[in-house]
Amino acid sequence: MSSLQYTSRQIRDAAILTTSYVAADVLWLDDNNTAQTLNQSVLFIDFTIWSLTSMELKIEYSDDSINYYQQSFIDISGWTATVSSWEYTFTSSGTYEISNPFKAKYFRASIIGTGTVTGSSCAIKGIIGMA
Image 1 (cartoon, one colour):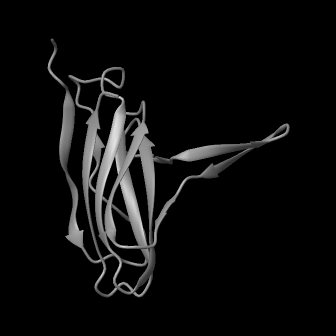
Image 2 (image 1 turned 45 degrees about the horizontal axis):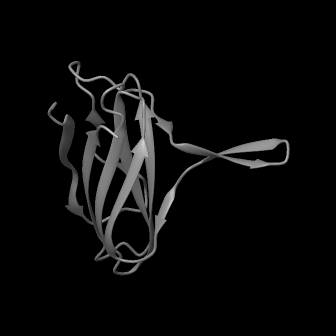
Image 3 (image 1 turned 135 degrees about the horizontal axis):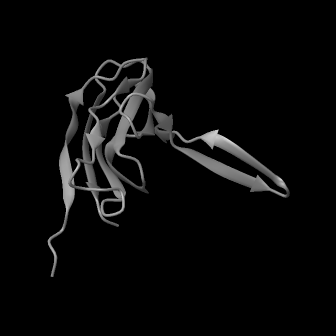
């Protein structure tokens, strides 16, 4: 039986949100791991809304740690496929989990608060492992 391979660490300590996107620390696959063996990202999010209207989170991937590409989705209607940037919106306090498959070497989450940020808080733990 092989041992489970994964990387897990706090990528954002609890802090008040801002009205501009702020990127959490980057998670990456080291040279001993490849996207073929570690192909699943998990975010554990601890969010307090307080006076905010919402928190928005976007996930971005990179192969060089310089140029990041936002996660997207495709909406197909008839013969038309529309590609849009994917953004998660949180409108109540809670602990949340987001899992996504990926094939990039670098991974990060960026968050922004909408409304009055006073009293809000968000902490994020990131994990990269096998699906």
